[in-house]
Length: 155
Image (cartoon, rainbow, N blue to C red; front, side, top):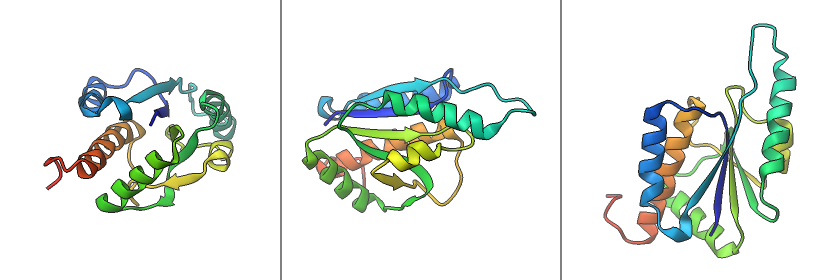
């Protein structure tokens, strides 16, 4: 299964890049993640945030591979425990199509992205910094794969 992660933000802190890379390199080739970074629009105290969110959303939408199953990461999305998420990953794999995961910027995802998504997923009811979500997402994909593969990582 081809996984595409589309995320707002470039020039992540080194700890984000290192942690994200650590988990993605552990994934097998059939679950490799392609990261597409959408540059965040500059924000000032007078920025029209709705316009910025819409611009970033349009860029994200344009980057979605055709035919993919789209999952938007959102605080209002579906919550899974680890076992349930592993089963969901297995279900996505069995669909035989690509999977695109969307991570918005500081203000979240545009309505365009949320409406385009087939599903919304919440990592937690807590609000997380969007760079950290990349790391958490990569770790959860790796953890789910280890469960499905009977690997001892998840105990």
